[in-house]
Amino acid sequence: MVRLHAEEGENQFFIDYPQHGSPAYRAGLRSGDQILKIDNIPLVEKTLRETFRLLRQPTESKTHFFVLPFGQTEPKDVFVQRERIHSESVEGDYFDSDGQVFCLEAHPRIGYIRITLFSGTTAKEFSDALERMAQRGAESFILDLRDNVGGDVWSCMLIARKLMAPNPVSGSVIVAVRDREGTERFRHRHFVLVEGSQRSTLPMVVLINGESASASEILAAALQDHHRATIVGTRSFGKGIIQSIIDLPFRSGILQLTDSEYRRPNGASIHRKRNAADSDDWGVIPDKIIEFSETDQSAVMAYRTLRSNVISTERLAVLDQFRQKIIKERGDEWEFSGTAPYYDPQLDEAIRVLLDPARQE
Image (tube, rainbow, N blue to C red; front, top):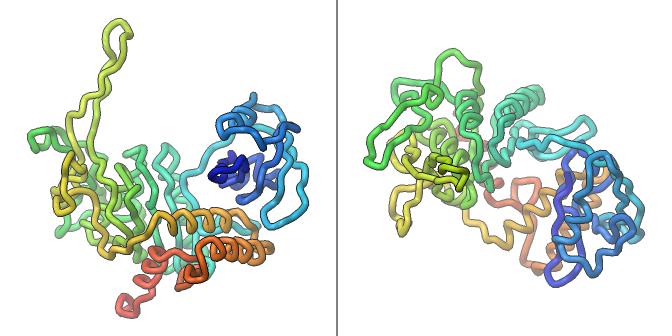
């Protein structure tokens, strides 16, 4: 899998992210590489849609890329064999020769797991990440749910059970379902915590932002209400409705009916209703609010994506080139600094929370 973006105002196409282990990655394509030609067709006058059309060809066929690798001056030919691949929804901090590493490179005792969305395989991927994180000796960890718009709620429930146990104080509810009148309409057994399952008890911080929605809000709210984690970042999106889909007669269409909503364990609504004010009770408000401009966030995400695609022996030189590029674009006052391994003030705050001596007492 390859994600592309086009530079604004120019017909220049760059690779955002070749999934690790995918045909593109195995062929040598990396984040930041500029694609000049696809199958000998120059892209200088192509739109992004036309470029994607060139990429969408039958499985098992081969594509010829002519690319300018990031940080280099000489283009090269890359041949990619198309295959059906599985898109992973759980990511670590970086890659080494053995694959994903679920601990921070600059703080190897702090684990790092990012869930990009909740799919049918996310719970299994998360369990594997916890195990690999523990094998590296993690003493605490960060769960990054930023820009996670939700997905499979059942996977969210399984992950919650991996992190929390029922107790007399906060109870066993992960999320409640309420109808339009505000009364509990039905109860799902998998919406509650259970005794006896194997779980992680490591101290943790959860990162969220304004794009964290639905299942990611359910998980963050449960962790907050059960006092299991410190939440850092900005207020979540506020999407907590449940819709029933009804097929109309004679295949004339479908009807989406909003009939209930999710409520967090403390009873507050997750969904942001129309015309809701900031002072109203919706979404998840972090314990520590760290504002983050969209401009800085886009630069950080690009830097982090590039970093996760570069193997250890190449990383420092390539990342320094990207760092200088960002500083040149933003100005000298824009600095990569802090405790985090790259500029990310929200991650930096999460690290400070976990390294706080008061937590060790």
